[in-house]
Amino acid sequence: MTPESFDSALASPNVRHMRLSDRRRKGELRLFSPAVLHSEICALLMMGLLTLIGCTKPQKPIDGRKRVVTTFTILQDIARNVAGDRVIVESITKPGAEIHEYEPTPRDIVKAQSADLVLRNGFGLERWFEKFMTRLGQVRSVTLSDGIEPIQIAAGRGDGTPNPHSWMSPKNALVYVENVQKALCDLDPENADYYRANATAYSAKLREISEKLEREFERIPPEQRWLVTSEGAFSYLARDFGLRELFLWPANADAEATPLQIRKVVDEVRAHRVPVGFSESTISPKPMQEVAKETGIRYGGVLYVDSLTASGGEASTYLEMLDINASRILSGFGLE
Ligand SMILES: [Zn+2]
Image (cartoon, rainbow, N blue to C red; front, side, top):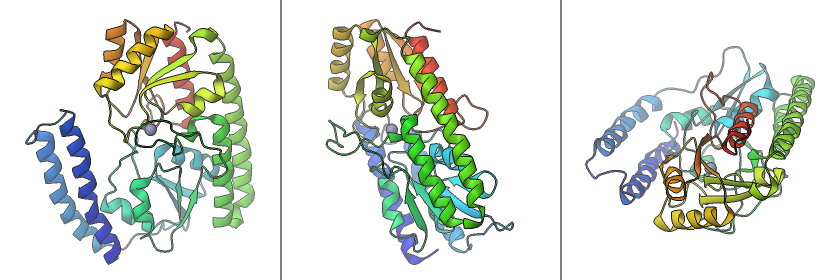
C-alpha cells in the first residue's frame, strides 16, 4: 500500500464520525450506546488491519483473467452479464449495503488498486469513492452513466445536481451495457466478440423486461399512478412508465425522516388519494410506516434500488430486482 492510500484509508473514520453524528442527531444512537462503542472499536481494529494489509501485495488471479471492480452490486451484476466467465467482476460494496455514504475500508482500497479496471455509476453517487480514485494511480476507470441524460434533483442537499439512480430505468441500463461492453473490449480485445455477443443477449432481456413492466404498470388506473417511497430514487423508473413520484427525502445522503418531510408526504398522499407507500431495502421502513399509520394507506413493503440481495435472495440480479419491484408495486395497488 502506498503512503497516499494509507492517508486515504485513515481519512475514513471522519466519514464514519459524520454519519454517526447524523444518526445521533436523529436520536437513533445514544452517545455511549453499544452501536457507537462497537463502531469505535471497529475503527481501532481497522488501524491494525491496515498495518497488516500494508504488508501484503495485491494478488493477481493465477488463471490470468483480468479483474474488474465495480462500486456497487447492481453494476457488478450488469457487468457480469457482459463479462461472462472471462473476467472476474467484484463489487466494493456488499449486497444490502447503503451506497450513498459508504465508508471505504483499507481492504476496499487494495481491491481497487489491484484491479485492471474500475466501473462506477457517476452522477455524484460515489463521492465517497472519488477521493480515493485520485490516489489509485494507473487504475483505469469508466463511468457507466456516460451518454445518459440526467434528471435533476429538485430538493435537499443535491438540489440542481443529477439524480444518480439512472440504472432504475431498464432503457438506461442498455447504455450501461454498451459502456461495459466497450470497456471490456478495450481491456481484453482478444475476447471482444464474446463480450459483444453477451451484451447483445443481455440487452434483449432488458428490452423484454422493459416491455413487461410497461404492460404491468398500465394496469394501475391512471389517476392512481403515484409511486410513494422514502428515497426519491425512482425518478427514472417513474418517467419510463408514466408514474408520478412522492418521496420523503430526495437521496439517502440527505437528512432523513424529518417531521416536515413526513408532514408534506402525509398531506400529498391525502390530496391525491394514493393507496400505498413503500420503503427501500437499505433504509428503515419506519418513516413510511408512520405515513401509512397517519393516513390509513397500506404499507406496501420493501423495494430495491441501491443494492441487490445476496445470491439466493429475492433480488440477487438486476432483472430480478426490476421484476420484484414491479410485482410488489402492483400488489400494493391490489393488483396481483
Ligand atoms: Zn439511493
